[in-house]
Image (cartoon, rainbow, N blue to C red):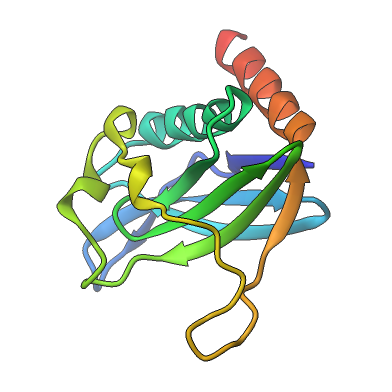
Amino acid sequence: MFDIEFISDDPIFAAEEGWSGLWGRIWLGDIGERFVAPLVEWHRSDYEAQWIAGAQRLIDGESKSAFVVEAGRLLWTAWREDLDIHIQQRLLLDEHCSSTWTASAADLPYDLIGPRESLTEDGSSISEWAVTLNDLREFVRRRAQIQIG
């Protein structure tokens, strides 16, 4: 199973940082992880459109894509290998953060994702989850129905 969605319509406010955001959750198989998507650079509709576009890229045959959960900072990168989709969480540090990562959802520079790696520089395994191409197709179908309905 693959899904990514907002789980609350009520924004939370991070007083110290001065921004608001929405709670969301990504499902990768049986594992669900919550996140807060800041509503600074992007709006709710930007995130939702990017998630569908990110999945559609892989469905259409692209080898890599991403699902942004914090514009310009945190994303889930994805690589397609045949019918398998491998997904890793990535935090973009300042030295890797380009102003283009805060581009609109339609202009996200997917070529910055790079090749899939399974080990860190020190040889530790990178956490990774696997879903299927059919999981992404079902996700796009569900989200399209929600947007129409």
